[in-house]
Image (cartoon, rainbow, N blue to C red; front, top):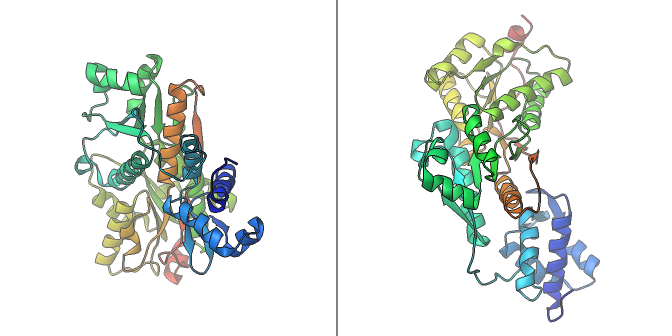
Length: 389
């Protein structure tokens, strides 16, 4: 342990090491003041001083009743790496270095106002995570002033920027694959924020969307649902993996999966008419929304027909949002670890740039959480007759 540190600073350093070395996720229970007092054989005042450093650094947060929980597990590793510039104290913000690691990021849109409803929530979360990451650590994310993927090759300024700094490509589509492959063959370091499957030479980091959909579907099945509708985007790998996770849950319970309930999203038709078709023609007992806007629109269509959630149809939505919690019936949701995704992709891209690791990078180990609220309930008697018809 570095000399010259107060006891509480040394304890904070050790706690950071425990968190960095552990398999912790956001909102995991970490410990209690009582347990830490016993572990380090110090008084409670010293433990509280150490914990204040971790709370101020947004590594953990405290609950007055239940103890100490993890807030940003990846910050622990980053603060430990910074400690070399702070005489061994990892929790004093170092002077801003003259050089910041620069990384280009590309979304395919110029700003969130141009995003489709289905993309805006996730892109906003990524943008906020990048800003937070940039404010706290020595990374600068450069927004490319284009929405056309072809410009990444054709525009000399764009090409020069990504060749020098590397690129995080947020939510690429299948049609973008030729451009990703061409840039990769040119030696440009790229990591996609998207679920697989992608070709072997494409680097990607994302949460395990197949498992997330399995968890959501399994929760619905446990309430007796077997007619679960889903609107799949066939050109988005994340949506494809979610559809596979739904089918996995049906197989796990030995329930026959009705392909009729799986609809393919048509970008040439408005989303409302497609959801109305699902509600009226497919008559599901539950709906798994691919994003929170789908869930909100679906509930509006139900309301028009005097249908209730969850009495008539249960709903779970991907891409959790405060809007879902504020609905008249708070909506259960799958919450992605967006900050951890951004952190992991950034660290791996930096390591790629400096030849500390090699391609390919296929990381879908990051876990989403199922947040249970009040939008899921047992199948109604009318819907039971429909399910067994």
